[in-house]
Image 1 (cartoon, rainbow, N blue to C red):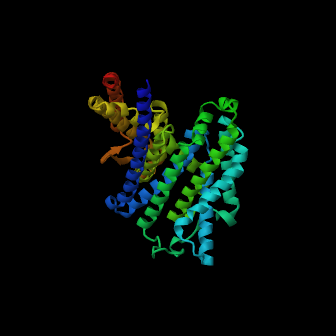
Image 2: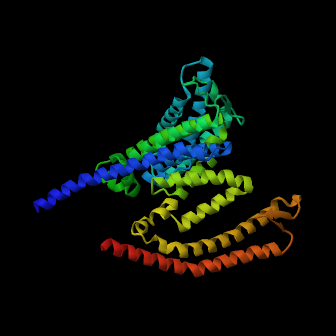
Image 3: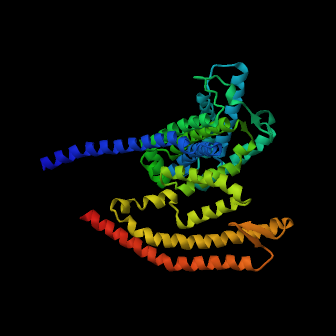
Length: 434
């Protein structure tokens, strides 16, 4: 027995060291990835998209501190993002006028401090209640700030907003941040720092207490902790990181307007966090990348891209409540057991059926949109490289046929995929036991 205990005691530090090395390796890979992406995607539009992804990653992770970690559904998280951006743009203009020797890389701290201060002010009221009451209070505060942005023109600049010039700040190593690649690396550096800080918070006792408040606030209070205090601290830290994201956005665009504090911006970060998966730290990261990409690409393809965002959100809520991260991580045991390849065939069939149905549904939506909103442009529209006459019956029949065929194929393939999944899980468990 003594020998067994000594062996177990030696194994535990070894496992801890291995886990620490694995986590460190993940962050090293992330740093190398951030550093190497501009070497692959060199165009100006690609660098702009990567910069926006970095900003959205910080913003989505800060929101996940509320929703995913502490169970606080907020409809007004853009308040701290937007106010951080406004304070940063005013600070930059003040630094330029006074010629203070303050370099641009430290300016996002102003946004973080602004987000923290306003989170303390608003959080002292909103975090006294949880659940639906907190969500409604956050929505009311968001509307209050959004309406104030059009009234207090001296600070918010009205509909035109406030502009600045990042190249006129104090330079280090003669870097003026005029080129987009320099701004990207600034955003990437802040993104890595904020990601590490927020992940570290999830591993602390406070992070565990946030999870406890999310699951059962009554039990947390029973063991001697105040759920209100835990929610308040999480809210303040979330506002801090949201302010940093807003400050980086102000530096990137060099203009801040009322849309930064609008409810639409709060909706975008909610979509990013939930689609990515609020139950996992990597979820909001995946959601931020996907949502940013789709925002830029879909807006160039269709005028009703926001409708597709809503449909995608509904699909995730109904069929994948764990988000993209949940879907990926549920296959991790199969990958470790080396049985994941068994699902390749059924998954490809299911994907083909879903794509057929999706193509039909998209065609119906675009036909209807053109018929109702763009009738003055004529009845002919182009989609998928093909011209369709919305006044004719044939494109509607094609769309209906695609939807019906895709739905039928999905109904046929779904039991096959389910059986393949069950077989793979059974094989993985058998391999684990052996």
